[in-house]
Amino acid sequence: MLAGLIFFFAPPKITNKFQFGFVRIFRKPLSIGRNFSLSASRLMASEQSITEDVVSRERYEKLHNHLANVTEWLKQEREKVEKLTGLRDRPVWKGVDFVLGEVIAASVNGLRGELIINRGEKDGLAKNQFILANESIVGTIFKVDDRTAQIKLISDPASKIAVKIAQFNMDRIMQGDGNSSAKVQLVPTKYKINIGDIVYAQKRPGFLSTPVIVGTVAECKSDDENPLVWDITVQPACDIKSLTDVAAIVMNPQN
Image 1: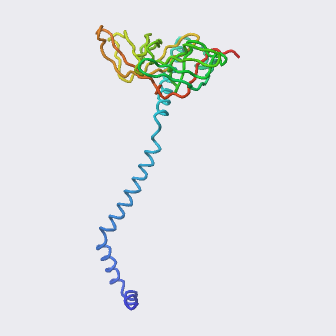
Image 2: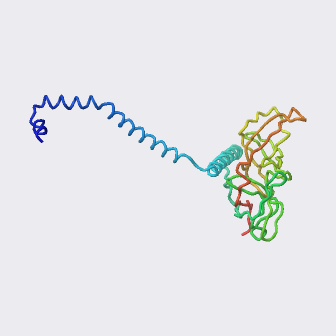
Image 3: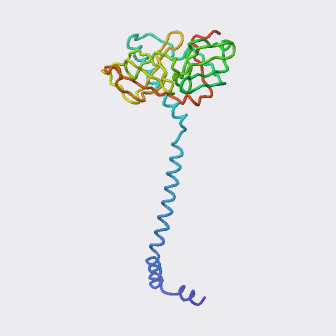
């Protein structure tokens, strides 16, 4: 108590020197604590930012495929406007129904790529209709009865659909290779094909009114038998092995 009273009544010059001395002695420990606090705050803010920016793989694929489709649709509409200036055209999906179906059986292996869904003729489904999942074409219907439909995935060796690659307006056939991917052949090497180029299912009257993404180029090399053409491997635009539900594209549905 006596020491406190002495310090309290001491002249300011003496007490100031004592305070400055205390600061000089404990400057490093205080600065370490302050830096640690700032670093912790920054780390927490960084982790929160990373958490907010990360999305699931399925969500990323869906957004990527949607962007690819919209880009191609805008290109198609721009070409129509250039040819038919002043004429109105219907929106891409006008007059189209999407019949949702759950996968009740699947066979996805090296020899086959097939699904069975719980929708059939009574729901408006028919042979050769395209199947959509995560905004991308994953196959076509090859057999249908009243309540179920069998789907041939684009990876099945028996699957053959007309496609176009990136900005090149050339129809080529894409065939499944039985290895969860597909092949596009007979593309001349004069075309510059890059890894990651988008592959679209070509429009087909009565079944598909506009190109829709099916996958991306995963590999492009000269064909072993004919070096003048490319041997192109296409990776599906979504994980076809984990599909649990799909949508059939029904053009001009009956009311």
